[in-house]
Amino acid sequence: MKTTSNKMALIPKVYCSLFGHEYQVTKNVTSHVKEYTCKNCKKELTTDSNGNLTELTPTFREINVILERVYNSKTERLKEKAINSTTIYQHV
Image 1: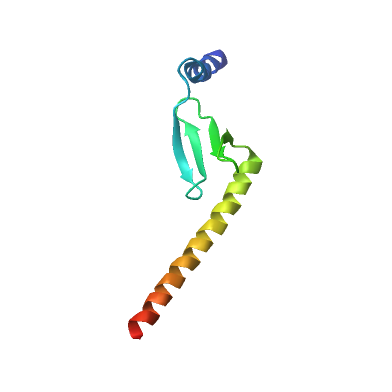
Image 2: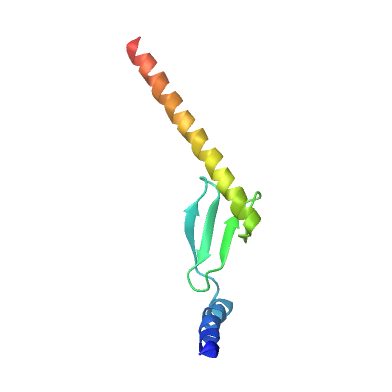
């Protein structure tokens, strides 16, 4: 039974080596940084600081979590600032 599961796990890797990976965006970290997963072999990639795709290691995963938190708090602050400035101009 174990050899059957090993053969089944090998099929997507062979497919990707012959035809290439089929990456899908699995997470939008920021507007520029995304995480991707191959729908066949489940290989995970992310965008590095130069905009190139690189393997999603635990270090890059941690960086993306922190980057997403900073990015989300910044966009929330900007939204609040825009709402507040719009409200001020409506009262004038």
